[in-house]
Length: 254
Image (cartoon, rainbow, N blue to C red; front, side, top):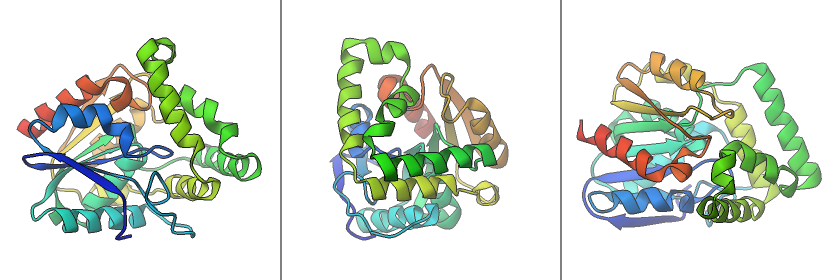
């Protein structure tokens, strides 16, 4: 898609931020503010999310990688640092395998390269629930997966959670279901073995949606990968934005 909604801020080498399923580019607000002093930060809404249009048909992770590639080509004359979390991390894997010339490095946070049958059944159940009862029916479960209990209980955390919940519940059911299907169908292991750029993999030690073991599997397949962890649940970049940004800075400096 050539008409993705995006925001650019800062100056310096370009860092592209790719958000999680059910979120939008504002998931990255705190991380972007940390990085834009030294980098040009480009963050965008995936198709069917935020202000990017819904294509109205099924799509795959390769399609999301093609979307990202088109945006990078339009906005940068040089390869970029590409940072993705969850669905964005899957996009990062597909992008680096399909378009190696567009990325200087990739960061894969709180993500996976494939799902087993049990997990895929869970995705099918979620799609069915959203189509029959709407996104509101899965919103509370999403918040519990995304954040630790203490973050949700804190004053600042509760406000952030409320905003992200509104964004999730404001999505259309069909775009969300289509994105779920794209995520459920990932099979990125073979492509990961072809990735040649430096890669940072970030896992949340309290992430039950994409446990550390899934990050360890990606780190074994990607030959130039470094694995780091944060004391956070699934949306680690929201729960620990300063620590997340520092991991990025240290990685880019290397």
